[in-house]
Amino acid sequence: MIDAVKTILKQIGEDPDRQGLKDTPRRVSDALKFLTAGYSEDVESIIGDALFDADYDEMLLVKDISFYSLCEHHLLPFFGTCHVAYIPDGKIIGLSKLPRLVDAFSRRLQVQERLTTQIANIIESHIHPKGVAVVMEAKHLCMAMRGVEKEESFTVTSAMLGAFKSDNRTRMEFLQLINRSMKL
Image (tube, rainbow, N blue to C red):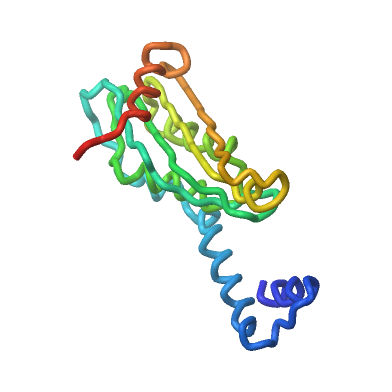
């Protein structure tokens, strides 16, 4: 990867051996490895033994999970917040596992639409809840820095499964909760 970055620097008219750029190829390589670490994440080990029997059958919501990803079309960042809810059906998952799942899928080359459904699907397939809802709100630098150059725009995607898809009241409760400010 280091040689590839040196080639890119040369192609844009830079000298990869000048003082300010000497360590850039290594830094870019390290950064890309970090930003795409999700490829080496094992979802099974993230969930591990953090599934627990529970009589709780109301909505469980973890909101405002920050995430960072790279657009697979331009390799530019998109970032924002993710809200994840599910309605247990006899099983719950450790709360910290939800942000870890968001990170595992967002630290890959992505499109926001796929990222949203991947998070919802993994929760559905491992917890088997009555329903899952995921909403992601993100700023895309590929839209802000280049192309249409709309730096104030953001993108919202959602995935609604089970009760969140079939029951309008459940969906509306979720949407109201993610739009409500918490005062702690």
